[in-house]
Image (tube, rainbow, N blue to C red; front, top):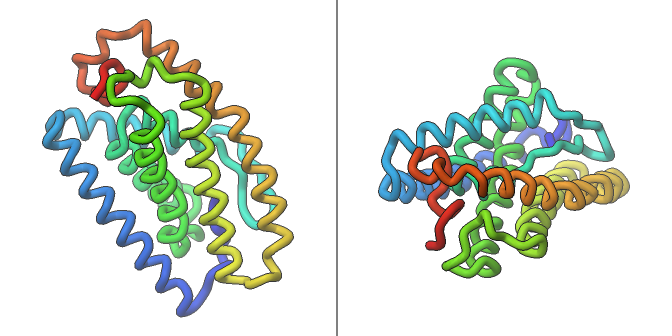
Length: 223
């Protein structure tokens, strides 16, 4: 989902700094909530797990260039369901930054756009989860339909932000590439809900994790 160098340039980059700052501020609010809920050790541990996972998603898992960007298996909804919104936000932001620093420094000027593209759909997942998952339902008990709603929200959000940045930077010349990218990326929606349910099924057999501080409290218990 990277916005490639040269798509948005010059003064237009200023908007990416604004959106990234907004996403960062909301992430800090989520972190404050998580600190109040389970404390710093749990947040730090879950954030580290999320960062490592995101780094693997970007650098190890297959990814292909399609249209205006690349199609990745990011598993944003999986991170949310296992670790919670704040750790997932930390992992997405830090994993992306590590990738840029270690392997793709040419992507760093686009960091504001890319981190916005990853984080805002995550916030969307949190909002959708509150609507489609009853408060008494533990995440390990989700149905396929509920997992699909979360995955569609995340992947659709990613596609929408990539389309916005491409059209913002290149205008209507990017339309064909945006359409190709969007069609390819939405195929991930066919994979991610199944991955979510498989991971949740595995977690269901490991209820001892509920006391470890390494997973979100909602994984095994209702709100």
